[in-house]
View 1 (cartoon, helix red, strand yellow):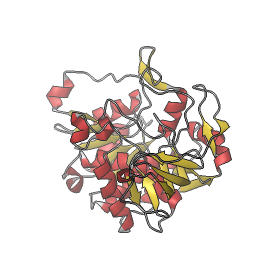
View 2 (cartoon, helix red, strand yellow):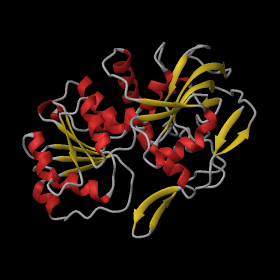
View 3 (spheres, rainbow, N blue to C red):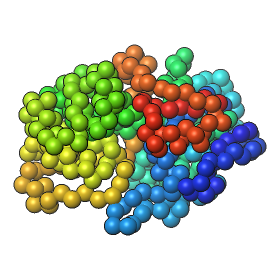
View 4 (cartoon, rainbow, N blue to C red):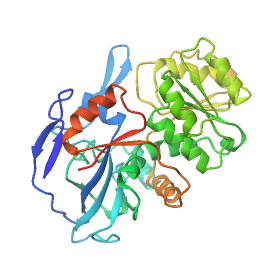
Length: 350
């Protein structure tokens, strides 16, 4: 089979011919129908994350080995089952949940495999969907999608479940007041759709790109504010109707984190999702003085992914814009995403 892999961090993805995988034990093999290209793939390709002060979190030091086929947003057709596999049938089309833990630690037993310290994530620690076929360790990580469009469904494995999980961390506040979303890329557009599906009070979106702001309003945002405007804080608060209780930062830069902090009211919650990196410079005294909660969100759980796909299958979440590309454009697509050339999501369709 063909796959496009990372052989050296920061070097172009390269084609490699590999044997078609054969399932062992409870494993399931799927023929890839769609593989989303995600901002996390950029960080994986780069080999780490910017921690500020000239420090970098190294993925190599965190157990990521090369060569690696990226791709953690995958939909495929089941084509082979290991001798111990059950609960799935040959020919079913499924979304692959990629955030796989050890299964034995405390967080895994709580259903929080996405926080496992011994994670074995597809497209990160094991070969992913930028290929003709993908292997998953157990059928429980497969979510059947019926006749839904694989290219539209693939991003739910990361951008979808990430935004769903972040929104769920805000509780019933989403019904009482609009949520501020910083970032109107694929995650921002996804979050707007999910908030509508959950009967929330709506979203006020912040982005420095006017095209993305327009797309956010088209997708249903109540308002879209230029984050670079000198009065951006006042504009956001006016659009919400008061200082907001809830902000989700889908970018994670020093500038967006500061804006998210500044707009919140007392007792507000800032959920950090984006991994742009560097450091935040919040005045520490203001965290207790304002009673602010700062919450991190790393993708989502298998149960949250199931809930999300149930909403999609029920027709309650409208698809976001998807740009489709052949597998042999994997490297070009990744670089275009890095350069901010897409609105919505980019998906490889082998």
